[in-house]
Structure formats: structure tokens, C-alpha cells
Amino acid sequence: MRFLLISICLLLVSCASYPKKQHFQLDNSVSKSIENPYFSDETKDYVYKASIDVYDKHFGGLLIIKKISEQEHRVVFTTEMGNKLFDFTFTENHFQVNYILDELNRKMLINVLKNDFKVLVSDNLQVINTFSEANTNVFETSIYNKNHYYYFENKQLTQVVRTKNGKAKVQFLFSEINNHLADQIDIKHHNIKLDITLQSITQ
Image 1 (cartoon, rainbow, N blue to C red):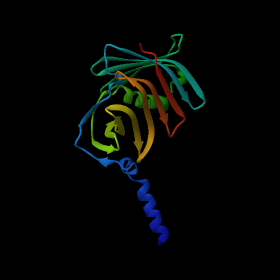
Image 2: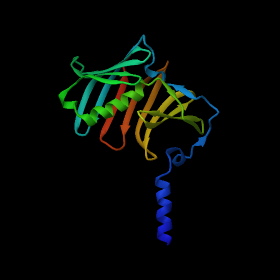
Image 3: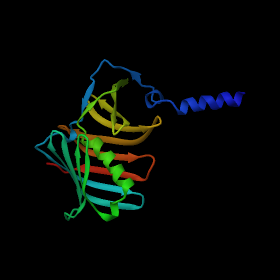
Image 4: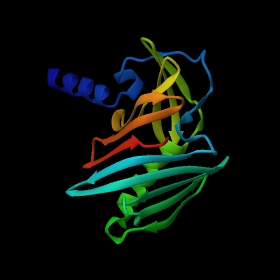
């Protein structure tokens, strides 16, 4: 009987939501929408020195993100010599592969890249719930029907966490923030061997 009770308690803990596991306090007194400013300026070409490590392969080069219109972003990854590795277009409800290198042309990988870069280019999101944690506001949103938690410290977006079954699945870390530009962005996956590192070279 004791073993059964312990098993039930462990099951309840493992099934707990991400906010409960993080001991967030519900606080819906703040905004019902949030903005991600880092790729929101249509007048800028956002250029990053990029490193993508997927399983045992490494790809390096330049990542260019451009907001084409209110609802459209273009994401292009090239070698430093200018050879294209992939080229994606994102609109509010549509994703298009304009080009992808054969070596990267795997359905699962394309889907992962689609989900990751959609987070970066989504600049206006509706909030499901708001939580507080010390000096941080945490906003729960949904992108492609997946739960995401946006962390704002002193009104600056510092982290996004994608979750599944109450656990962090992917972390997006923004640092060296100046003038609505995150000079350093790290995307870390916890369930697959994929890490993306971006260092801004935008002038």
C-alpha cells in the first residue's frame, strides 16, 4: 500500500504543469499580449555569425533574418563565402522552404528548425497566463500548439522555454541586449543533440 501511494505521488509530480514545477505565482494583472522586439524592425537586416551543431555535424556561417512585412519574415543561412544552406519564409500561418542543402534536408530537422526560428520571428503574441517569479514576469503562450514561456526581466526578454509534459524541452537564451537587439542568442535542445549559437554582427 505504501509503495502504491509513493508511486501515485511520483506520478502526480511528474505530470505537474511547468508553472507548478517552477513554483510560479499566477498573476494575470499584467498584459494579455507581449512583444518580442529582437527581429521586429522592417528597416533592419539582422545578421548573425551562426553555429549549428546537430548530432555529429557542424554547420557554420551567417544567419540573416529580415522582416519583410507586418506578417512575413525571411530566414537565410549561408556559408561565409555566400553559399546558401537554407532559406525559409515565415508568415503568420504559413511556413515555406525556399531552399535547403541536401545534407540538411531531413523532415524531422526541417520541422525542428521551423519551430525554433518561428519563436525568434514571432514578435507579437497573445498571452494565455501570466506568472511572477521574484523580479521576473513569465508569460505563457502557444506557438504551433506548443506551450512556450517568455521570461521578461526589467521589461527585457531574456529567455523563452518550450515545454512538453511539464518539462523544458528547448531553451532560447537572449543576452548582451542593447537597443532591442540581442547580440547573443543560444538555442539549447534537451531531448535531441542540437544547439544553435548566434552572435550578432549587425551594425
